[in-house]
Image 1 (cartoon, helix red, strand yellow):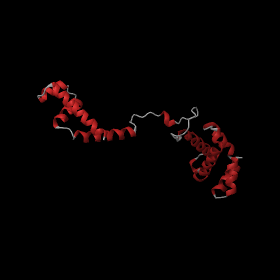
Image 2 (cartoon, rainbow, N blue to C red):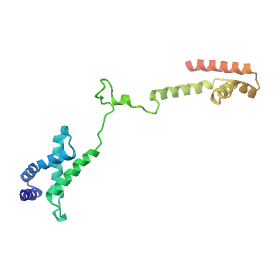
Image 3 (cartoon, rainbow, N blue to C red):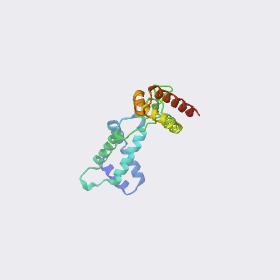
Image 4 (cartoon, rainbow, N blue to C red):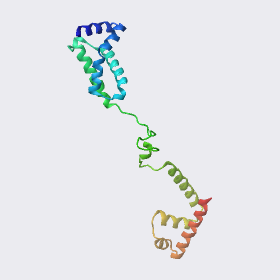
Length: 187
């Protein structure tokens, strides 16, 4: 049988299409055995067979008898490595793919991100811009009390002392400034 394979190989290498077809048919059991041994995924059997035939056709082109390796040994090794490398291929999974166990769930529903929701970011940016615009409407004293109290975390008593005003005046200034800011933010 090995001589017959070698003759078919010689004719196939020269471009004889019927010899290639016969060569592939003769080596079909070798391809099937390689699939069973190295990458046994039954649902993909037909595709794996076709891939095996492609490997054999490349072997016809690439085989070099001068290297001291038998033809069938070379083909067998190439099939082995091809199917073993299939384990390394990455499967692409859609985040919108429905999960088997969930009727209405998708993979996307179970992913948790560290980043904030984009809609929240937009809303916060708009609020920040509106706040900056509203701060410009405050008097210098109101602005200083608000920034010292909220941005610098200075207690209201210390703000009053630093500004040389009474505690009650500082509280009233803060209250009036907040009222003014709220009315500006609502617009």
